[in-house]
Image 1 (cartoon, rainbow, N blue to C red):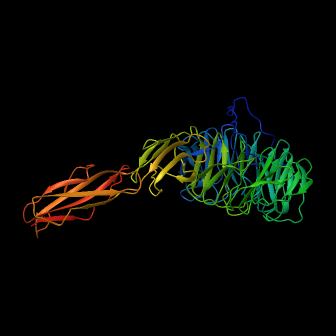
Image 2: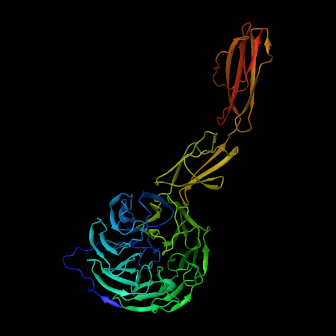
Image 3: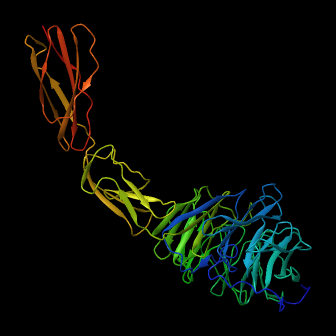
Length: 562
């Protein structure tokens, strides 16, 4: 049943022209109204580096990216529901907000972007439009007859579409300029299914893979009936003339429907616990923590990423697969080969959440050359590395270094993450880096930005971390004449002995020694000392090697004059 409440949206001669369309925005859950997680943003390439990170209140939902801004939905600090904040994409400063949008604190309120506006539906049925540049409220309405609104809206061509449930289901079409309801169509679907849009119509699915296609006038084009009925739903994904729908039972096989007719083309032989992502030839799925890239047409697996902790709906952007992991890591892989291009880290952990489970709806967003990653109450933005060059300062290449040596490395990138390759073995590292702990001998150090393929700095050095072993003696412990000669030497298995240092103390026999007098370093190995009658002279020696390692002082050796 279609209830027509008004005419199609129109623009007046005096209306302000919408801003020029953003070439590569992220306008709703999973990038776009097809929910296919795909973008061809040419400014986005690996590796990435962290541009900025902000702390918000409560759990941050999927973000939006458009017009040089990142839009974040989080909790209101006074627990009055959810709020929207606009942040500068370049540095994360607050442009406007937080703007209270109501609903339930920590709830399923959602939003989308189109033509310079942010459209928000809160989980109690309120819908509002905000000016994307200023946050100014343009209109605010209550959607009638239903009381559960837990799906992201979808917007295009002057209309916002959203599903409300609670007693059956209704698809609402709302005028973007005024908030006026254009039409409402009864659909037998549960919540959680975000409408998907293409040039031919509107798609929404429910439990048991019940799926509707509606025309843009609200009339029902086709209905694909499942083998059961029930509440709840999943977001359909549109790709290449097909509709990919999933059941609430994550272990059930998805179905692939013909977008034109609704007929079932095939039962898929893969699992997808989140919305799958597509580019022209690849499909990316996450199920049971496993990320798998498949041939988009046949569904045959091409490669699988290591690990069983993948949790976010995947994205496919400009030849890269982007995926969040439970511990907060974000992986960027080549979609063709699975090779790891970059790995970043969000400040908090991430959780897997099915669309129908505990809100808010989670996911990453890529647009305008950046990647926005919500994790817990944080939102972190990563951007492509502009200059991957690394600079190493410290001992010159070819130098002999000791335990106190430090190599410092820098990059023009903010918040750089470094990988050190020591003698060909790679490991994450931070500046400054010390060779302490390496075996004595020649070594190499290469430092680059994490998973960068260029810009590495290299240095070679010989490490000597072992000090010489010195010894010192007098010819006899008692002398009768006024002078005696002390001798010392040292052995060193590394770079060789360079110098010695002698310290001297005196006293009358039977009295405490005076304070040590430390002599200047010398390469000599003997010295003559004068000794007064009934006095004694004591020495202790230490040695340095050519790397600058000083030994401990030898045991005190004394001689007395009778």
